[in-house]
Image 1 (cartoon, protein in one colour):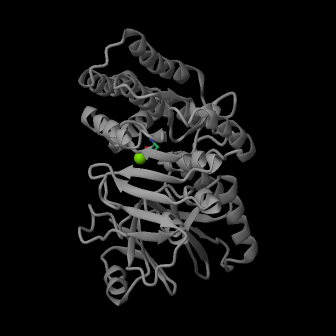
Image 2 (image 1 turned 120 degrees about the vertical axis):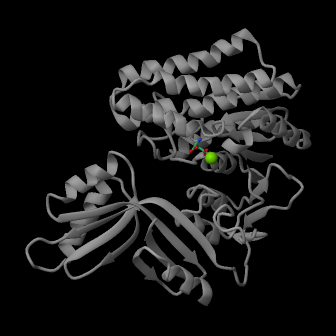
Image 3 (image 1 turned 90 degrees about the vertical axis):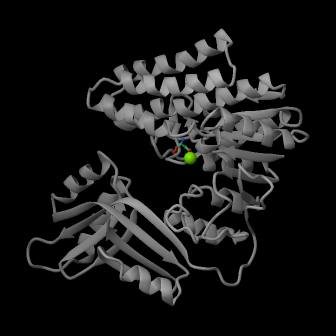
Length: 413
Ligand code: ASP
Ligand code: MG
């Protein structure tokens, strides 16, 4: 069996959802398991709801916008079943309830933002049934079992595997539709990190020993750069797992970073294909050797550069570095690039509201801390002479680092 993942853009309006049905039709002889993301930019909109709630502002206008967006799609798809519409309404009602009950930001976030995937999967399922497909909707929270690390939950593989394997009974005859991005602890909803639906697809595939995973996207495959930024970007025909994993580490958003490992371990190929042109070959990520890859350029936005300066004219020593790493680990923050000098240790991290200000506060107890936000980290992997020069000499570079294969520059934009 195959696992398909449809991202937000592939279900962003009624036409897109109809296109999903067309793609699924082509594979109906062997029913796939379908993992779907929230419709369009719904996750961002729900994130806004969480932020507003946290600031004790009115969430209703934003919630209504999300609801209107979904309602419009339902109308265009001709979905009018009152029972179904009530079930969708219930999801929105629950958001208001959560806001009034849960104080912890990240916990509240997961309960609210997960609604995006619940709504999209319900709509896709309902539409496919209306079109005559044999489909079953399942709640991913009962299959992807995690701990309570909200917004970045860790999978309990033993429980997850045994839950997912029960699906083998259904799959030969029915298409299964489920949510990406979300999991459950048995008691509460968790999420796997932004863009985590790819990872969900990989989890289902690994536990079912699937033949392959296909991620359907709005690009023709994995590209050497974001084509919106660099129109000359090329499509990779094939990539080794290792190369793809490294790309995601540097922030290539085409695949979620955690996706590759479970697939590589199980030897399951990952295809990235274009939903607008399913006939195109796309990219296959699998066990292979590619001699010389062209430079790959990744832009990671919303970076924060933090510098910890020692205050007593001594130099940064190992104990101090160890204290910094300890604080980072306690705050669950990952370093994207780091550099040290005699009296300061600097590192760049993804900026995250609440989390990073808290980290800075903690570090300020021991160090004089300076920071800049709104930066972009550009990574050039497999650089050649031309790209090496081009990116090092860009205006606004505030930190630069290179190894034999990889150049990284942090720039003000
Ligand atoms: N909807 C979630 C997000 O936008 C998960 C995903 O799309 O993969 O981050
Ligand atoms: Mg997405």
